[in-house]
Image (cartoon, rainbow, N blue to C red; front, side, top):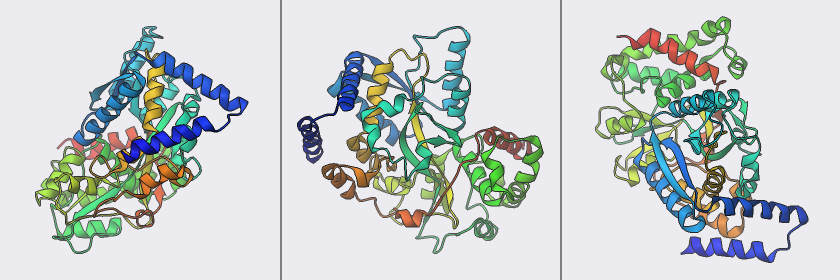
Length: 405
């Protein structure tokens, strides 16, 4: 009820405040989008591997259909790269309209690939969304630069991500604070830590964390990978993996399937340390009974990998107006607040809460992030993602070295 009242007050204030000529033009332009979107069905291709996220998308879809007459179908995918390939195939056969994908959950190397191949809607559309005004561009630079690639308004930010580790404080008094301490822990407690096998996203993220933390010259990672640089840049990474892999769960001969599997192994007592790319994941899992209340979050000294995840519209989307309406709703303070609640998802907001209207700001301030939450200060600095080209190079080198066993 409070949310509905807050939203109503916000809309009332908007109508009572005189609009400038440019604001009137924007309002008229957005109204045209709303009119065109009504009755459209948006096929939203998004990862479907987490029940909490699927439930959130279902809620958002119901809200948008009720309020705007736009139907959203969640097409559950296991890997966004397959969706990129689908759009690329459509372009190769000349299908410049009527595409099967209206909106895609994306970031990183998949965004870079779509941008390079001309698979995205024209630049700037994300900045035309009414709720773009609330995006924290100043303090969250990854909302405008995705894995070193400028977004140019071709994808709309949806949430923030950061590598965060978790442990059960009932079994482990003090978690490791550095990669060297993690290796020492693994030596003293073989089998109690692991990571998913690349190219699983979480496994690759662990590789990137070690790479960024050990590379002799971090500036190399902001540029496209070259064969000449790769060996020297990754030598410390593979030296570290050579040391820790035999000490992993199942001696590094088998790996957890994904982040959910790591959480389950932590809950079952098979692992003492797991990790996620969502700072709210441990609290969300506690709230949903997936992890015991004694689980706590931690990060490594010096910072951990972080980025922003987005939604993007393909160049040949069949229902572009509806896709914009849904993307705008995902940016609304109400949707961002709900997404941040631990029992819903626990995903951090892309909005600048300090600049929101007081009634909307109050929604964020009233939230309780649960027992495993870290403060912004405790989360520490964000380490930038390497250029997208490093991802496939890392995964291929890892597979050659450790995959065929």
